[in-house]
Image: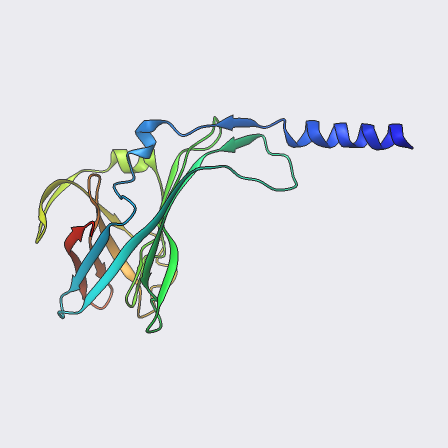
Amino acid sequence: MKKQTSILILITILLTSCGKKIEMPESEKLWNPYKVGEVLIFKSSENELDTIKVKEINDNIFPDGPTPLKYYNESLWIFVEHTDPNYDRHLKNNFLEITTGTPETPTTINFRLLAKNSVFYDSYRTVEELDSMKLTFLETPIGKFSDVLEINDKERRYSERDNFVEKIYWSKSNGYLKFEKKDGKTWELIKKYVP
């Protein structure tokens, strides 16, 4: 009985540790423009204000669980405190996720914009897709940016919702700069600082 238990333990260890660990290259980590403690203040076209605070940046995140995986690819998550899109309260949530690719899957970035009465639902993009997009110029109250990607919601899954964001403006050096909702309201980054 002891021998069978030892064999089962050995098989379990072998199965759960057989996946290849894939660390995120520094070039992919550069897609994160944020620092812990940063405060982002957005202003709407109707003069409303919304504040987002960067609380944590966790890299070196690898999948875990009871089933063996072929690849254990690293992720980087940025957690913020933001206004609940539906209620008058603040929540802590991941704001941006970067997951390095494997030989079989591309690196993805999940733009998880959640703000006051605003949600960007179609959030996943591959780095290859983003790299192929044309960079545009955008002038905002915090500066002029020539490294901006206009990312539209392609799927339009929840376009009937009042909080639906149609487009985000993402600066490779500064992150979220602006977003446009279906109702015509826009939100723009007016201040970014570390207290």
